[in-house]
Image (cartoon, rainbow, N blue to C red; front, side, top):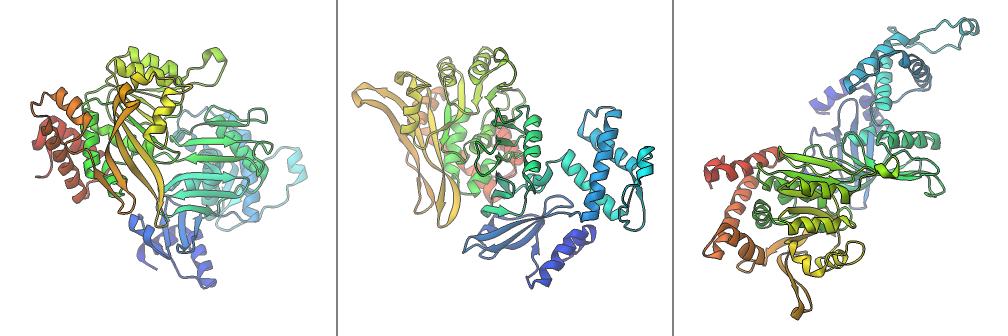
Length: 548
């Protein structure tokens, strides 16, 4: 057992108990890792424990070749006597809470909980089994304090905070930074998509249908969109930005109430991380840099879970820090780093006359003359407003559900969006993203970048040019647009006043060198990458922290 694991066990007795149980069953002790590396995804027999914030640890264990990997959340457990004490304390806290001032912040709520807990308990040196309530004392309403030793106190405080302030049984999953999605079907079937180990079943469960239903009702009220038997389906954003969809009621979800949660990254993924992961290469990233720096309108298109919003957020630092950004979304997912950012969110609750949809938000944004309008997702008539914005000189970025540029155009010109086909060339670039399985691994790749030239009657439709293509056999991106890019030569080079339009490719490859240097220097944290990009935009080569 290494030093870090020993120290973790000293501070968390339940972790030591878990490891002792492994040894009793003849299982090898896991390696303790404070952080996971992407190389671990190549392990045939992963056996690693990592912390997600005391007192919770995650154990990844299994056989990757057989696809049998377990995700085990290790947290304190309440014995039957401790559970009884917990229930008594919670009842007392709920009785006393209305007499306290309403907390305005999370910190004030935590302090109030500790205060109420201390009013309900008496600390002792030893564990004391709860006695049956004294009938006489109950009749005269004399409160008997619950006796707790320090270990019991720590456990019960953890569960009170977990269930009141935190996320209940799924708290370990919310804390885990290596998760992308959480899927729960019924009471105890909780699955996750791990960034390194793909889809895994967890040991997390709600215990009973009533507890699951209570959790779903509480969570739906937290996002301001309560579910019920008459309104069984809802979605929205949790306070941390994670997106959740809830299907409540056995009538609608035959295997029991369920939910899907897409986890929110507080700090966005950087463009260098995406390059390191193979989603794009430096030339493709440099192309996006030039396009976004020069006001091109771009759609990030692909199927569900293909990485559209992740790619969009990673590219937003390419926009000048001096530009004004407006975003319009159903659920807050876009994270522009620019100081002048107006974030607009739809409103679906309340009487119909108070509803605000994406169409309305986009019309409001156009009146505010932003440099860029970012649409969380274009699905319907709001698409026509987005194209009006492009026609009036606004740059528009959006995500879109379509797996190819041809399908994207078909959706844009068909119901309910109904963009006139002659207006399609207001959109400059379509980035097609896809979630793929390659050699048994789940990957996200940009499979093509297509430039929109426009509608030509003689060609019988919309003409596009593929400037980047992904080769699935070699897992490489190829730049097909060298000396043949309509957007670089006919749009951006003209805008920049180049006499020789081919000089624009020198700009592209210079930016590719900067990105490659960041990759080589292991500069991949979002804000470090952002600073280098903005310093270069402001000061040129003198703004770089390294020579090229």
